[in-house]
Image (cartoon, rainbow, N blue to C red):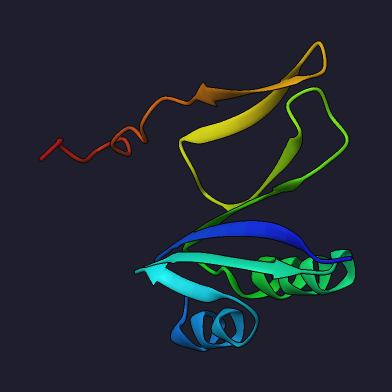
Length: 105
């Protein structure tokens, strides 16, 4: 049975955006919304994780949790979902620091 999914992407290859738009609607640049089966959702996520490259992606979908949804991430992000006693919370990581020998801009 189809369920709603939301996929947010940042700096991903155009061919990945095209693949996502076959199954979902790109409501604003980089945000895809659709109703797909769990099998299609998992196949889309596999394609995302294989081609995200230097970009980033987040998938939110219904799940039998206290919150009613699950979050998956791929790529480098400052916001990292963590499990805290069965609740998914978002932890902010420190921004990337300048490499040694380089002055900050």
